[in-house]
Length: 198
Image 1 (spheres, one colour):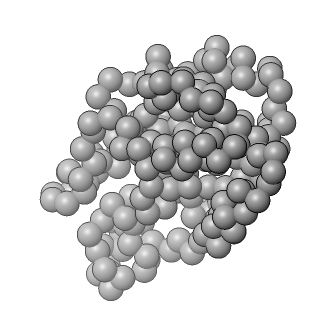
Image 2: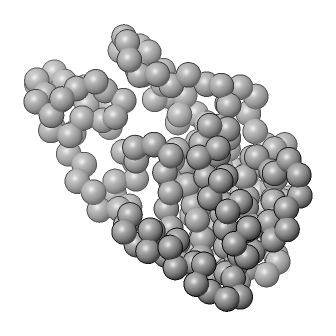
């Protein structure tokens, strides 16, 4: 997948007319968006038409760059949440629940928002979609509607709930979750805990 992503992104400048690129970013944490923003801006500067649905619109208008802003939907404090999983079990469980809470609370409002509904009524012909795979898959509904080749991006290690989508092995008896500070040599109780958290 990484090779395909690199290949596609390296060949984008070869197109003389530029591509229509759709960026879908459903996480309301600024630190995640800061990872992808330079790529999106660079693509627009190279002559591609970039449309981005996110919580972080550009501060100044850019040519060939269109923002569909979700700022009115963001949950206060989401950009500063602490998901440090080092420490006690309670701290780890709270981090996991916090990530899930943000995902659960945003999907419905995001997809039913006037800005997304207006976008879906417009021209949906795009050459490629760039989508963040992090805490929710609600933007996959837009991917299904647009039906363009899709490249998944992640600003961190891939979350465990995406493993089924990618065909990655995901056996909690010997593969520790990223939230847990275990090695692959789990004790029986660690395996039980790892399975329950999974």
